[in-house]
Length: 242
Image (tube, rainbow, N blue to C red; front, side, top):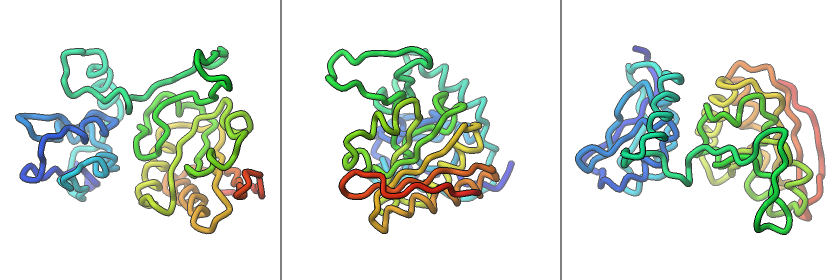
């Protein structure tokens, strides 16, 4: 056992809604007799992606002596869940990791007049699993979630042939983002990292998140920092060395 962060569920507060089950990318939580249960410490990465999905505030993260997180065991557990249709607590289709396009193959949208360049799902940094296959050897974009709205050509200029995670450094928990991005960096060898944010002061927090995550993961990875103005233009680009 090691001293680490682990999810704690207050059964008295839990109403059995199952939202935490859907939110857990590792499949560590299951409904048992109408209550959410942590089925194995080895499946829980301790990042707490489930916390924000609990309407009863029944979930916290505590530091305690626990079994180490086992990525391989979690992957095998997820694979079994995804292929067993009899499970009632499998990962929600809306949050399940999906590769939307295969590398080297062009696909056309059946409905969109302008094809999307999105290659995977989900994209929210809170929801992605650090072990998702689309992070392997990826050119990763860490993007403030306002950027694609401001920038009309975001898909073709930046998103094409890239993996993306999005978040808001002002409204969301930066420490959680640092932990999650560090976990992605530890679990995968990225080809590159590009941080894209708006010119407003609060948005520059995304640069800090990237730097802290790189330091926490002990990864020597320089990244491109791109600033977008309110008219959707690239205002500034610079290389940040770790």
